[in-house]
Image (cartoon, rainbow, N blue to C red):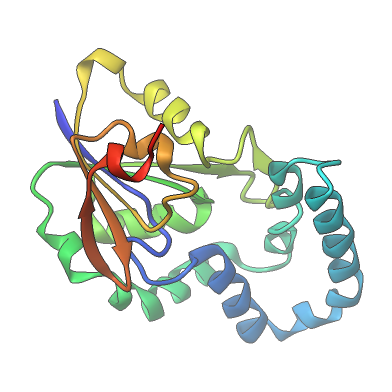
Length: 199
């Protein structure tokens, strides 16, 4: 089966959906500001521990969405996409093949936009929707390829196009495609894998 692979944040949409969702929730559920004096120091300590490689990025990210336990999550997600689904790049609607979106963003946030956009497969970071804690690994870097092959037999798929804004983090999925597209300022910039990732 021929497939195309898409990153999501800053690729299909021009923003980081997880970060923007956090801001949206602070604005729409202002009582969250009451927990910020407790939450922010914990995040800052975790950030320092991550940068000094005491903990992993996944361990850090486990703390970022704990606030979802305090909000009506489904209502918040619906409201968020009611406001921002108009920002989806128009070229994404012109897809011609089986579309696999692979993202580090939370499943509780992207499940809704998958329904609205109707793309074929969503692979993203799994979270406990009641606590916000990550289940398993953060779907990032090489983990994107691992998750792809958990969903599809390696020999059953033929990756044609790969789209992402990140040359740094998405080398593993770019390596799978016949054609690579770097998303810059919402535009698709084609490139040859071997020319960008020199040995």
